[in-house]
Image 1 (cartoon, rainbow, N blue to C red):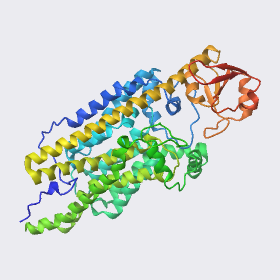
Image 2 (image 1 turned 90 degrees about the horizontal axis):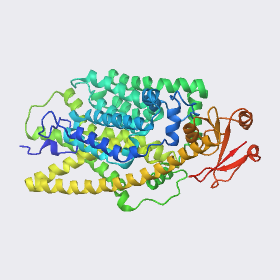
Image 3 (image 1 turned 135 degrees about the horizontal axis):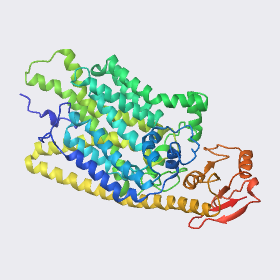
Image 4 (image 1 turned 180 degrees about the vertical axis):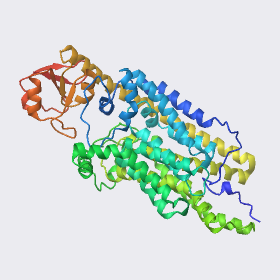
Length: 523
């Protein structure tokens, strides 16, 4: 007779694992509340707007001119904050609203996985993801990466629940459409990378090989990507042209093998944009989790595959009645799929950032971390059960204590990095506000124009139009600038660290901007 505990055979089981907890389990809700509290204590203190935030906000802010919207961007995050910014210009109100929304979204996205992994594992996965400093910092920011991460978690969970013989599969397919549509609105190209493993599963795994599931994947992409595609033809000359311009803006996406991986490691704990990324890497104590992550994921995948192979043997040894072949083939892949599919989607989402770019930002990999937190949580649960099977209650307690100590040390490191990066972000954005206030004192008030380095966030703060005559955000010609300067108040920002003064501004008057390192040149 077989004595193997099926739940202990791998890090993630296809059967619902309720962990002997009542239906009103509150662990995931507690993680979401803790996530909100962390944001309010740390990130919300950084009240002023960053560069990219001002671009996204300006698209829907009725009080300010819209900034140049480059080809790589998508408008989903602008749509999300549009109701808030239409009601109030208050940045603190915006921050607090995003804290509440991001915490609710964290709860909703990970809850999709409870029937697949069990409440305890899902709460642990949510904690692992929410405990990262970049996750906390991104919660109240007007940036798409965290929201894409949560959409990806929900999409993969709904896909797994949409197998052909599952109860509630229609609801699951509806959830899949909504989650993928949200992902495509937030980052259209990334949504395509996310969908590739899902479509491969539709083609290769019997449990999901149905027209309805494939249609849900493609329908979600189409629903969310329609606006991006229409804009591609309206502004950029077509989808191919927009992708080419996006590549140029990103510095030429191509086979930067190793460069993106090195840059992502160096930028693991900041800065928020490492371009070019020539800084030293983080200390081993602050990067060990990242270096161990591939080992943990490989172990989780190996255990899941082993559990899938052992299950038919257990049925045979126990002489249990064999299931019908079609039902068995549709059920068996699910035990492995709850581990392998999020890993496959995470690798697909990581590919463009690790292999095709030569720079990095910690936020780029948020969807990867969110998906990989699920199999890591399953691996932790497997370790606890294995210790319990080997040494009884004492072994289980020792495993829980050890994992708790490791998790506590990891979270302490993340809080330290959160404090440092929050202070760094606050220092940068405060300088934007000081520069905007000084421009107002110099008479640069709406309608007005700001050009030069860092023009966009300062122009947004001052209520001006921003313009660039070169670089990735080129939106105006030199003649446009000269004509505008003759009509409206105009300021050219000058950074002594990158000393270049355009010919048209060499007869203008310079003014220091107190509290910053910059000068403003006015006609």
